[in-house]
Image 1 (cartoon, protein in one colour):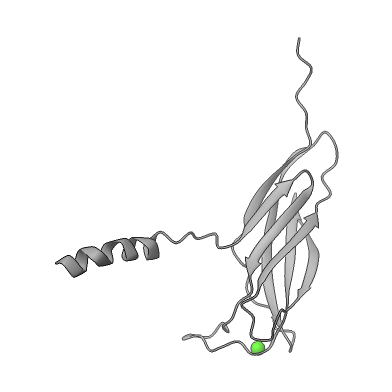
Image 2 (image 1 turned 180 degrees about the horizontal axis):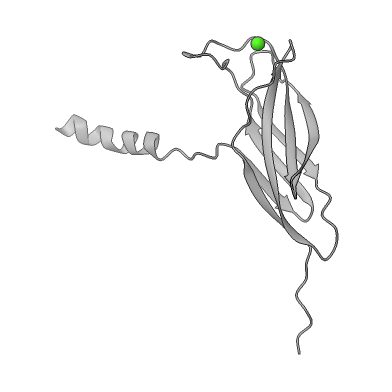
Length: 131
Ligand SMILES: [Ca+2]
């Protein structure tokens, strides 16, 4: 029983692991994307990745998809931590959501499915003047 109780916090940690593994943090119109490269292939059970070429950051504004940045792989086996800044074209006096996601490409040009999407609210809309 004592062993079981000791395991409970570990089990909770495993269950509570956040779905959104990566983050996109806005400062003005600059969004900092922070994520980890994959280190496995998409097969099941997954085999080890040995041909990662790059990851690609995308965003979508009002349904228009833009490829923001190609990030060369830190290693063909992946697993590197990536931090990149992306400038999004949200003009003055506008406040809107920008949806970000990342994919991975291997050296044969195969693209992974999308990562989880992260929605960032870009706010360039000031309040009206006090009265
Ligand atoms: Ca491959």
